[in-house]
Image (cartoon, rainbow, N blue to C red; front, side, top):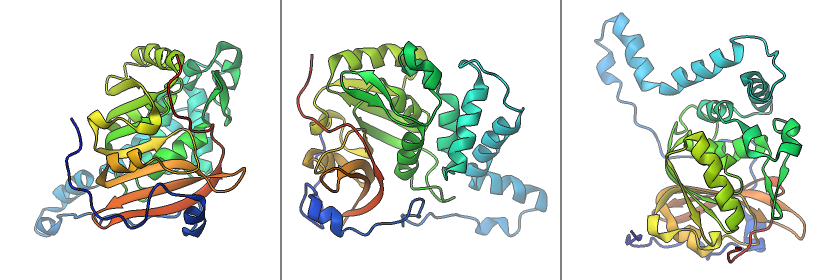
Length: 301
């Protein structure tokens, strides 16, 4: 299926270049981004008996229930396990992420659920829950837990209570070993993940079958071209950075959708860039400095 919707006028010419990114307003880490207002239909609660008001509010604020489940998991017992198959190590990782500013309950819950040690090489497994990127072969890396959590939180609208609790259809550029796809599967209705290196594509497929990530579709292809057959996408996230955002990504982003990707902002620097597609065009914001592997075109057997 291809995207047949008419394209809205663009606010600026794409792909984005260095001078355009430099001119974009830079926001502090964790700053909320204006999103579409959320309608809360609560007028009928005025005449509701007090016992029903609490139940109605719980339905209207599902993020409170999810946050409670995360808090319960973190406080259920004091971390003591040393084995990597123990939930305690993931609890400690999530506590660290929360201390560093990650607040979205859906993101914290997803990071708690996915076993990162299963996605790294056996020689490096002891470092699986440290906040560090690790090599996965073929010149690629598995991103830091803090970077994965930060990018997905930005994709979901930030840490604010009005941010969405679940994503719709997500396009991931750069499957790698499949870890980020597994985390995305916890917060999205459907994930399409494209990988240009066949060996990594095959590895991720085997690992995600074991994870039972049934909502993930893996594609062996050129990530710079996105994946038009399933476009448009509600969200696009990239695990590699180039000098500009490919036009194919922007064309495949649905109106009302959001893209998060690293983009070069200097000869040796990259920054996270958030692009929202509106009916008027594209709005972009530049966030903190990051370091990702370079974005490349083509496919590798």
